[in-house]
Image 1 (cartoon, rainbow, N blue to C red):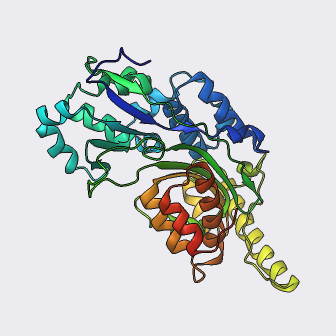
Image 2 (tube, rainbow, N blue to C red; image 1 turned 120 degrees about the horizontal axis):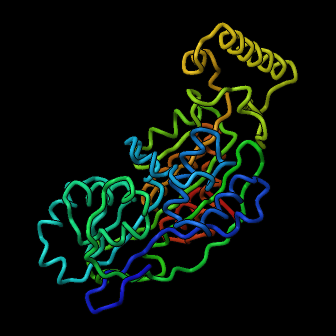
Image 3 (tube, one colour; image 1 turned 60 degrees about the vertical axis):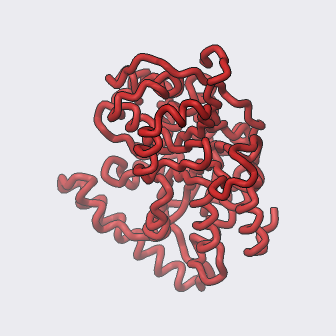
Length: 358
């Protein structure tokens, strides 16, 4: 809840959910959208991405202390999908030059002109590690579980939530893959920040996707893009066979253009691996050990988020004609959803360069 406005109030740009998820066939993303009406989107993204890892999305919202427990355990990566862009009053920047120096040494922050941007993990760690109270009330409003987990600081800042245009884009549900835009922080798209002639002023926004029905082979490529944040379903905690129940995508990904003979041979090889997995489980091996023999073709799902800059870099590489076919197909659908939600100039260039049509 915003504090009273003042001439020194900080303007806050946050993630907004994709209302188009209400029309998706996938019940999990509809549950996420419902959770956004009961909690802040920052808390909803944290819980949803954690439950994707444990294959327990059906329980979202059922345990009030779930997010608090995640934070207490130190597993903070799920915080990285929410984001904040803050336009700082000039007097704060001048009075707190030490803050600027600290932010500039953190690679998870972006600083341009009088604007500061970062994911929720970077903001929470900065506030917690420095005992800085300038931003604590904003973090407290968006991530109350973090303060329940023991990082309370007295609120000091005044801030104003900037109204962003609603987002309503469809989902891509082919099964291999399914691509959903969970939310977007449109940042500088709807609200001009910084000076027009400021050379370091640049576009800033952040996108959050759920991707399903892709192979572990694809995700090995995907995680090389270190500017992204990832939360992937865990083979350590999720039994392979039991984890397929209720999924809207097949358990394996098959290469394109196979003959019937090739497809049958591959399927037999996949099933043989899974049968061995089940045998090892019956012999008492833990899931984290039995998973060693599962094929790269095993389907998975993950939450992935990135700034418009990082996303554009990824899309330019992976939408290219010489990219591997599976990740290229996924990337092209991500480009379409991102551009429909927030048509940044960088995304428009990607669409034109790779002949991507809506």
